[in-house]
Amino acid sequence: MAGFSYLHTMLRVGDLDRSVAFYTTHLGMKELRRRDVPDGKYTLVFLGYEGGGTELELTYNYGVDSYEMGKAFGHLAIGVPDIYATCEKMRAAGVTIAREPGPVKFGTTLIAFIDDPDGYKIELIQRGSL
Image (cartoon, rainbow, N blue to C red; front, top):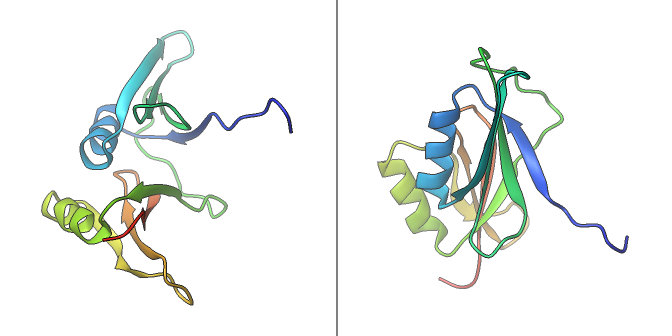
């Protein structure tokens, strides 16, 4: 609809510093802003890429160190320039590669999946040519 735009996706995390480090170190996101709300007992951190676009909101609720994964959420998707090199670099840094890079089933798009520190799935999608 006219005037609508997709702003962000929110994930609840058990360790805010660990999650911010994961997304900034391994996926190249930048911390855009942070809001601590002591009266509400939560902190929000918004991450994203230079140039704008959709953001990732990490929500830490004071005293909650883990969440049960629901079955409705699927994954986040991040475009990368070289999926094989990206996965090797991440593997060397200790990131869990949940699905090795390769063509999507019944297609040619190159994808891989990694897990973030809270167990959320992130699909890496090859952008451009190798």
